[in-house]
Image (cartoon, rainbow, N blue to C red; front, side, top):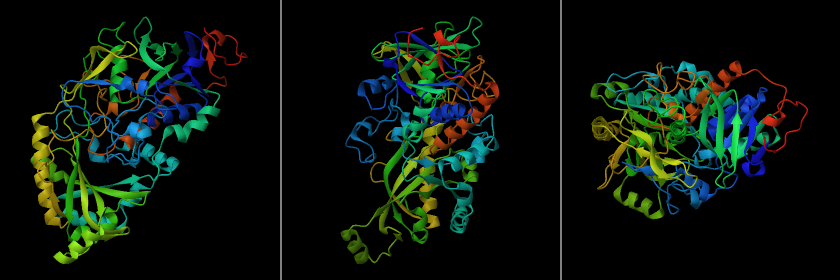
Length: 525
């Protein structure tokens, strides 16, 4: 069932087996998976059914270095969204940031999990094979195309082979016709479930520990209107983004100075995103004309491809994994006449003649401790300390961006893909925007001296607190993290099934726990 916190009594206490914080891709996946398997779940969401600017303001960040992009109702880049969400990178609304997501699904590659000696703090403590079954099951359940079969399609194999001779590589992603919005996908199921209770308008303010400081016993919440709620559970999952997960851990510092999972001062550190530049163009060459149908972006759903320097080049020049995307820009009547006058051959796909390709250049970032999230002294409307973001880059980041752009320009021309035109503003980290791919603030590691969560996504130093989001990514190559977030959520869901026994009961208020026959009601404990 779905309930607003205002429909509960003052200072209500709920009890469930698992508390999930956040209703986005990860939170909805974990919560519904556990509920289907007989677990009692409480899902807490700060937002409500409708977008509320006052609640959204709780996402405000104090920027100490490079800023994120900002709300821009006139932005051309997010025309598929309502004006109040264009440029927004995090959303406090039922469904979370899935409400603004574009719907691109892509595996990480096996090499993305491996350490690279020239990239500090690189490598995951798990391998690609640890997530492969979860990638596959999610693709089947959500109705995605088969990325593994697509990689073996004859045209893709031929193009990949041709690019390899020029030191380039390519990979595919699946683009949904209608992006997954968890409020729509899971809304009816959540409303009908008797063992899953969704509480809207409930912002987590603190996690409380037992006397031994090992187990989280209570999740404390409050609404913008001042209504308070406590939820007790055997396991707690922070299925929020990298900024909010770090904020909750750091804000829970009354029992442990510095916050939960922070004995080595690593919560909030290693923050990364994918700086991107999307105003360049590519004048198509013969190879682009030959494979124009593979570069097509519409109609969706469809498979699309992106490009990068091959692994050998990255290693030889000690570079990061920067990725380039091409979007067809179709000819106008005057474009076509101009092409004929100049005697240029046409570049055509299934949608028509292509004048050029818009180039989106997306960069990986070196994870380092100086790029971090802290809590500032400024308070939000609920009296909570605001998140302060010090998003910083290393000299290696700057050098890698410049070198990769030079090499991609050279090798695209050599391969016959075409010529780049960036005008007087070529991509630099200074003029790039974020990609809303916040990662790394509770990074996964083998030991607490190296990260915040273990390979089961459990916060070090706790017995029952988990993080399910890109916050746990140790590194992230330059494409959408969403499929890997979903795979990690599925993997965590299976782990929690093994640690929490099924129950035939339904969610109860604390005052009703001793009365198994009492109906669920919103009365104070």
